[in-house]
Image (cartoon, rainbow, N blue to C red; front, side, top):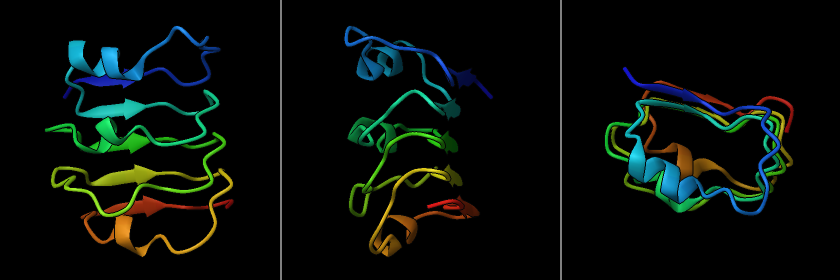
Length: 101
């Protein structure tokens, strides 16, 4: 399992999640507390990504239904999410955390 934890890093506008995921094919990715305002669609399309943690960001919505067949854990706790989350979660297998929203 390749784990990448970039949580709590003060990224500037030059940082590109897209470039990172092209270089590294993680099975577990933590982007907690980095100021994300939206979920980059490329994250949910990553083959082999099993764990994705986006907690403690500034997310207000999630992308619609995705083909994230390998994703097993999706943590979006402590964001500003509102509305229905069922479409995104319907494809997840094991665990979803939405605590603190």
